[in-house]
Image (cartoon, rainbow, N blue to C red; front, side):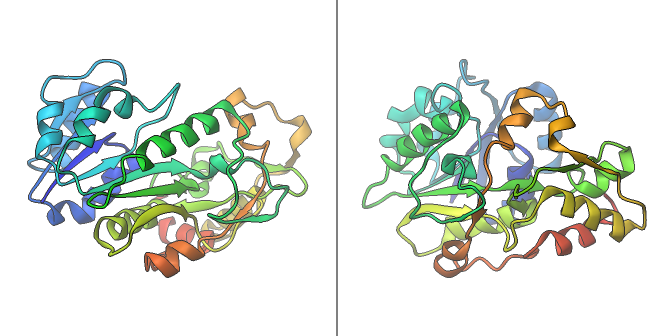
Length: 286
C-alpha cells in the first residue's frame, strides 16, 4: 500500500514517526528544499516533491496515480491548493482513502457552549471560510470505493510547541479574557486519529480531534509552571495585550468541542486526554 502526502509538516512528521512502517512506499510534498532534507533524513525512502501551492515539481501526478491513500495537510488560502491543481488526477486515481486535516475554526464562535459534528459550520474569519470550502471539495471526492475523512484539529501542542517550552524561553503569557476557552490536542493524538482514519471500517465524514477538557488559556500556563516548579507569569487582561491580526482572530471565538464521535466511531483512545497529562509528559524535554 502506497501513501501520498500533501504537506509534510509537524503533525504529519509525528504520524510518520510511528506509522511509516504501515506503508510500502511514501511520497509527499514540502515547500522548501531545507525541509526536504530534514524529512528525508527522518523517513528513509521517503520520496519528496516541491509544491508551494502554485507551482508543482514534475512527478506529483504520476505519484498520485500510484497511491492507494492520500493524506492532506496544507493550508487553505483562496481554495485548497492540492485540489486546485490535482483534483482531476485524484478523482480518476485508485486512491481509496483520503484524510484531510482541517480545523475547529470552521465552527466559529459558540460563546463558550458545546459543539459537535452536528453543529452547523459558521466560520468567523476568512481562513475558516476557506477551510469549509476545502472540506467540501475533498468530501465531494467521496465515492462508494473512496472514503474521505475530515479531521478538524484543535490547537496543536507537542515537543517544542507547548506552554512549558514557552515558560523556559520566556515567551509565556497568562492572558485572561473572561469566558474564553480553547480546545487543544497533543500531536501524538493527531497521529492516532490519522492512523485510525486510515484503517477503520468506517464510511468517513467529519471528526473533531481534540482532548476531553477545553480550558481557559491561563489555566494551561499555570499548570505548566506548577509541573516544572516555576512561578507563573502575571495575569494580563486581554484588553491590555497587543496581538498580531492572526493571533487576535483566535480570540474572537470561544467554544467547547466534543470528541465523542472520534472516540466512539473511530475508536481513538487518547494518549493525553487533557492538557495536564500532555504537559507532564513533555516536562523532561519541553
